[in-house]
Image (cartoon, rainbow, N blue to C red; front, top):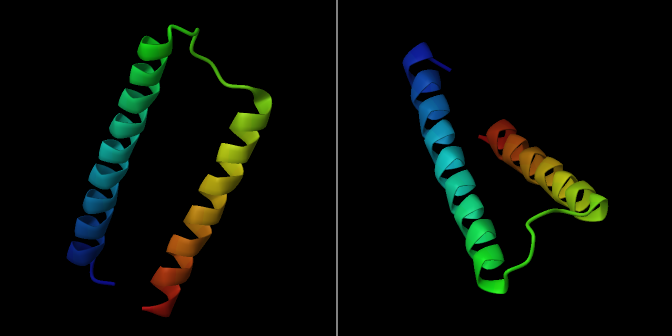
Length: 67
């Protein structure tokens, strides 16, 4: 992959990741403001989320290897 294309792909990926993270944080904070609960995660939720993120990264890596 040419260097210019690589930089563009990394920049777009970083921007999309930042926007998705911002959206997730907003939804998390809003949910806890509406319910009045103390924000937090259980160990089970953290492990489950981590496993789902690994699956997502594997799928993205699979798409890159096919192209």
